[in-house]
Every structure is written in structure tokens, then in C-alpha cells.
Amino acid sequence: MSSSDQPYIDPSEIPLEEAALQRFKNPSDAFWSGIRDAAGAPAMVLFAGMVGFGAMGKTNGFDIWFTTFTTFFMFALPGQVVLLEMAITGSSVVAIALAVTLTSTRFITMTVTLFPQFHQRDRNRSLYASVHLLAMTAWAISMREFHAIETRHRLSYFVGLGLLCWLISVPGTILGYYLAGMVPAAVTLGLVFINPLFFLLTFTEVKPWINRIALMMGCIFGPIFFMIDRDTSLLSSGLVAGTIAYLIDRKFLRKKAGVLS
Image (cartoon, rainbow, N blue to C red; front, side, top):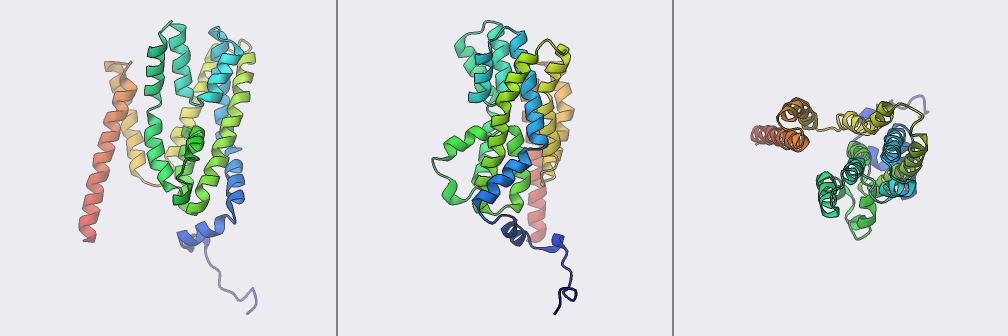
């Protein structure tokens, strides 16, 4: 049979497992694919956010070393902003440590939802190093892509994705530090919020529709709790919106299970 006589197969009809097996030939291929996926919008958005953070450090009197080291060792933009803000107000080291820890509690849920998707052989002590590469951007993209990646290649893909995002954040911070004062302060501070916005848009593409309901609930309850108490509004709105979305999901799953049974 000639190639012209062979029936056409729609790629969308290929079983997911088979499509995943065909995606990467080896871990190195998966790693460089992660690099390529990060090299576009994710790295640019994170770079812009770190430019804003670097400018924030300069305008508030912090030196280049302290500002850059927070990016290199923390790699958590919300926590870095909290660190600078509390240091400016003269808060104690203990208070700063507790506040930064609270802002980083989101990594617990990010870790327990993402890392169990790695192959069993990859769930070892090396994950302690890999977890440093975990950020909102890398998590959202990984959650979106993992369903089409063979299990044994997921860690390599994640490392490539997260590594470039981490490395690009350092020069972004340095550039922002030296550009401070050359552009309006509102612009540099606005850059800090590009990363959460990109995360929000990326997260809506994650397959489970309940994630979109959680985001919608957050948009509704966020302003309400902000008017009640802006200091705790983010935590309160996240807790309430996430709980409601979880309950809706549980009810939907139970109903679906009842139909199937």
C-alpha cells in the first residue's frame, strides 16, 4: 500500500497514552522541551516581574546584593515583596520570617498536587533540590502539560521549565535595580503584578473545570473581603472561594459516581 493509500488518522483521535509516549524520546528531550516552553511568555513575564522587584529594592534603599540574593535564594516574588516591606517598617526578624513563611504556604498545596505526578523512581531526595524551582508559573504550566507527558519524563520537563525561569529572574532583578528612576514608579511596581496575572490566565487552561470556578469565586469574594479587612482579605477570600469550589467539586463527583454505579 502506498503512502497516498494509507488512511488519514486525526492526531486528536490518538489515545492519550500513545500521544504521551510519542512526545519525548528520552529525558534529555523532555528537559529541552521544558526549556523551550519556558523561553517564551513564561520567562518574559517572570523577567518583567523581577525587573519591577529590582526597582522596588533600589527605590527603598536596599543594596544590589541583598535585593539579588532574595531572588536567588527565595525565588518567590510575593514573599520577596513582603520581606522588603516589613524590613522597611523595621519589623523584627522573627516577624519577617513568620510573614514570609505564611506567604509561602501556597507551595504546600502546589507541591502535593504536582510532585505525586512524577514517576515513583523520581520521588527521592533529589526532589529537595527540584522544589526550589517550583513557582506559580512552572506549576501552572506543568499542571496543564503533564497529562500529555509520559510519567517517566515529567521530572525532566519540570526541571527544564523551572530552571530557566529561576535563572532568568536574577538578571531581571539586577536590570530592574539599575533601571530604577528611569521610568515612573507606577510602571516598575506594575511589573510586579504581571506574573500573578499570567499565572491566572495560565491556570484557567488547566483541564479540570472546577479550577475556573475557584478563580471566579476568588474574583467575587476578593473585593468583598478587601472591604471588610484588607490585611487578611487575600487569605480569607482564598479560603472561602477554595472551600466552595471544593464542595461543588465533591458534590459533582458524587453525583457522577452515582450515575455510573
